[in-house]
Image (cartoon, rainbow, N blue to C red; front, side, top):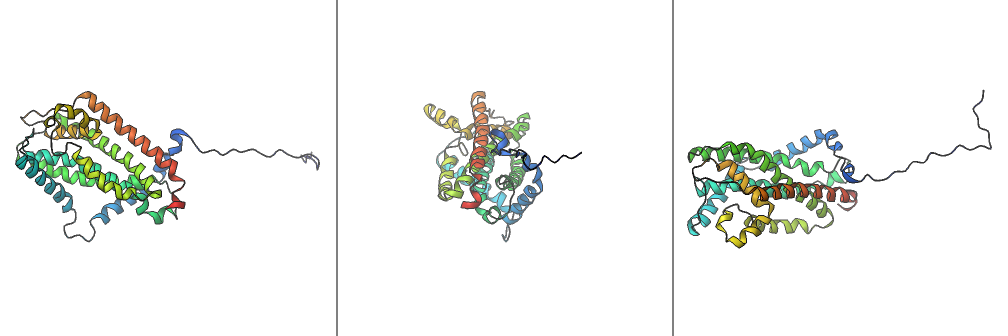
Length: 289
């Protein structure tokens, strides 16, 4: 039996429609699992190169927040005469700097990750999300080292953390989500508009003074506190500081539940929005960068 349709009968051509994925499928988060080895390798490279050819090496992780906390203590605690709820103004400032440094470091490094790896983006295929995500490794290492210094300060000031310290990963995770969301959007925009890499170093210090890093929100006038709490970092920094210093006799209390929910929701929203902006602009990276 022959299956030849003959010369006058044509077989229909298959119709295949290729459309770009929409919604969360467009993020292709499964690719991050497939390229997890590359993610780990880039994170390790970032950690090794950060303090290469420096005399003090990883000691800079400790010296930078210590010097900043000392300056804040002198300016706000001594000259301005501001009071703090905690064992000392120095420990109060250092606890705030732990959260702020994690935020600013993640935002700065994530925003520069695409331009800084232009040779990889233009020549090799891999999920571009790997580059900004790989910067989290050095941030977490710096936070861990600084957290050990914080533990020494608590011993010096004879402060025993309460059970609130168990919520520390929650505050850190929310801070990193907020910073990474902003960093993803900034990284995508920097590829096309290099002005972003010059604007961020100017904006970040202003954001620090708009956040309660070296002062308490209760020290501000009543009508100003609402504006300060609109900054999602405010409640997150207060929550982180409460987790670290909440066991002291001064009775440090967490921010109100309403502002905590606001900040946590804002962090997740920014992370999702940043990822969507990044993926929408990703197809142009190799051509523009």
